[in-house]
Length: 247
Image 1 (cartoon, rainbow, N blue to C red):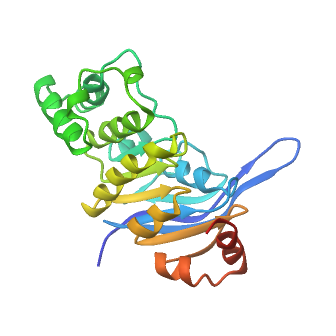
Image 2: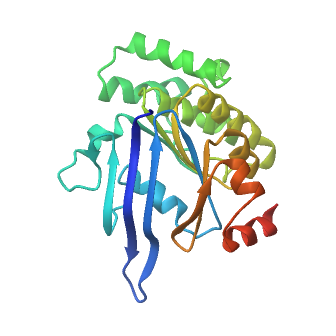
């Protein structure tokens, strides 16, 4: 039986202000080793908030989150240590503009894992070849298309040898013709056995790559199941209405 890599237990996230906003409500979810779980739902449904809580980019109001045996939600958790094993790819590429593609990928392994430059560069070139950008090693981010920058961002995350990859709407900032090249890399990664938790609006990708699809609305996990179950036979009326509008 596959080991549980991520466990989210009754998580709530409330934003205090003039009016209290409950971004996530009593969310419970697990991701097993090698599993690809895709979270979908309308904008503002709490998808990204829940995802970002996994590596403590968002602080939850209540509940618990575990990565392996580490309780990420505990105040005593050394999140920097946990993040060494959890790769994150954002909507925006967050590449260092003053560094070359190769330097962007090697900086974390050299500084955090104290890898020698030659070894870090050899690994970076392997990853660039994997994402189809070996010829861009000496280029700078402003010389790349959005799709190329996002593929570099994926290579950069993989350079730390993560056990888990988190993707927060990685294609939302891209022009339509650039989306496929990023999704192809993600599908390849999924097929390699990487444990992945992904927030996306790309329904075709969710159907093709996910082992399980999770539908969120109003901060709640409404329904989850295999892609064929959820897309072809949604049980919850809210899920049915969502698909009626987008499919």
